[in-house]
Length: 212
View 1 (tube, rainbow, N blue to C red):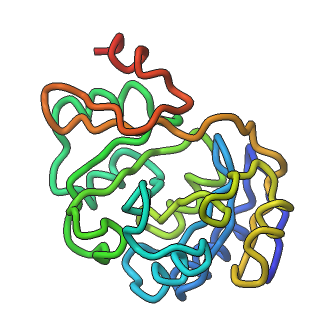
View 2: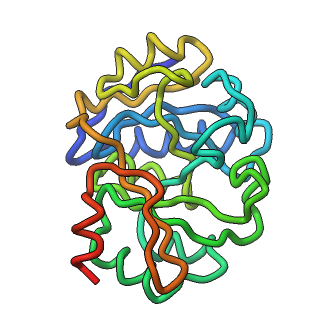
């Protein structure tokens, strides 16, 4: 396992390119987000996705959230993998991204079934963190971003705790210093005319409703 220090505000391009290459070769990368540390893989690589489930110590679809969430570099990158964005989803994305609001979208071809647990949908967001966005940008595709911890264990805001929890199973850890911690992202399904809260988080659902 390799560990690289990166600037959280202005990450070094070579480090992001190196991390993206690890992902594209089927590796697992720990990285900081605007909430907690995440564990990334290429959602198009079935072996890498299976490694994520094994690393976290749970079976695909075993417990909520059944599917693995993604992070993207931009709304445009999300549009490239989604079948379509509902008008409400687009409004919320434009209002809250980059930030800790995760939105459910209908997924297009290319993402392996274990990522969406056969549901045909994924939860995705554009995080307000340069390292997380840069990793997806250099990969050229939204990447899996599940919490960097074992199943049923607390999520972490430090790279040291993530490394201790996941051990040498991961291939690379991007050390961007402590994250803000606190609640994870809020998950909302806005594919219909009435948004539905799936997980309380950093963005109060009342704010989501007020924004509409």
